[in-house]
Image (cartoon, rainbow, N blue to C red):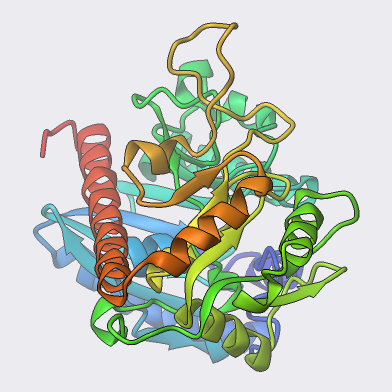
Length: 405
């Protein structure tokens, strides 16, 4: 196919749609024709390499920031090839005898992306809000054309779903509803999760805010930390976050914690604000995690990566989320099913009035107890990522190639 056909128009249209929260906003932008030439040469090399490999092949098209969490944090991949000032990034790795190639960046656009016949594809999309759903639908329609035309043999989806689990727009694209996508890895506690065709996927860390890949060997887990707890975030009037801060103040406990709040949500971090946040995680034994629109938030995973125990508000937020293991209308939905099923060593509470007792308990812990807890938490998170990698590659191999791993 002539993959450069329409690339100029597609690039102009999709450059602003690539980053759901604004990452890559400072990337250098080359003229589209120059970009097309660079990508064309790159693709010819990649095509030759792919066709000569003895492994089964899967391409991952990353069009949402969670694609970087999948590639770098879960699969352990790198992005050594960068073109056009970051407009196109790619990397490859082998897992379970399958060659995975990952492509991401503003230059990865529908109808401008070359497809080798016989390709199996995992598409990573953002469906969190309507503007993102519109872009996601366009990508899925394009992928459907490739499936019907025979260029793509199998299609899976990793989706950052709606925080209220309102994902009905996706239903027509699912294979079990007459579409072509299977399996689906869906973020948040969707009631669609069946562990057969739809699997729950973690929100992960905020790669769109450039949160780094934290390596356990780089952590200092054995020295005292300056704060018992921390909370950095947006506080809305009447929210449980406001209640939490009021309780800390009323009980005279605010001085124990690193607190930095704002009244308006900011999609991006500055170098200074990211550094401040990482400092808070590294120097706190606990990280307070009140609910937002959804119970699950990036803060949970970011704290775990640094060995700061998440104190999670374990309540179901409004909407259609929540798994119900008993399939009974008389049983309340359960939030954070994936983390609980993984035996996450967190502190769960349902009322922030429990917090003073938790902090008093912290004061009674010895340094040895705190160090051992940090080690357990970091080890758990490392094992959690390893399990995700094993499960993801197992599902892809069984679904795409009909082989058990």
